Image 1 (cartoon, rainbow, N blue to C red):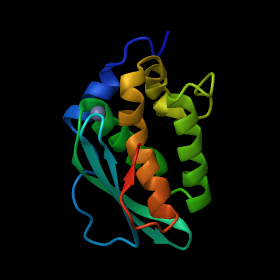
Image 2: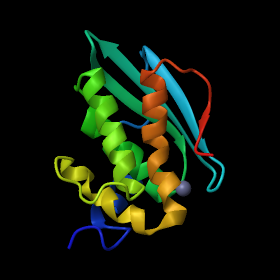
Image 3: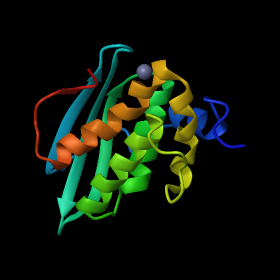
Image 4: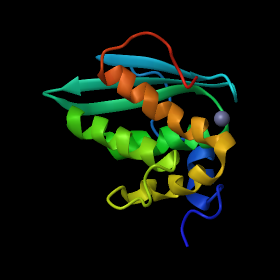
Amino acid sequence: MMGDDLYQEVILDHAKRPRNKGCACQFSHCAEGYNPLCGDEIKVYVHVVDGALSCIKFDGHGCAISTASASLMTEAVEGRDVDDAAAMADEVLALVTGKRANADGLGKLVVLEGVARFPSRVKCAALAWHALKAALNGESDLVTTE
Ligand code: ZN
């Protein structure tokens, strides 16, 4: 069954070799997230062109789960419409907080399903998605998980 082991291969791979990590050279939206419980800091840069996320990058430092979640997020939402990306963020946040029973329709993000069973890691997994939502909402202030 998927999701029983928190540190699945996909999570470890994205934690070790994060995709789309580094400062964006060009972006229209940006927000920074901070999770004081774990010390994770993630900044999300999004370049929106014609209502779609033409480019998304993240930067910062954090634990394996926060890094992997951010990396998976950039792959999942790149190219999507802003509304789609925001809706996906809501679905993932529901998944990792256990408010959603399954990961149907979330593709590869199913690997985040197991996080809901590890309360201390939920905020790590949610951080990048909160930052994405804040960026898309045009909120430039620091968002925290608290
Ligand atoms: Zn963390």
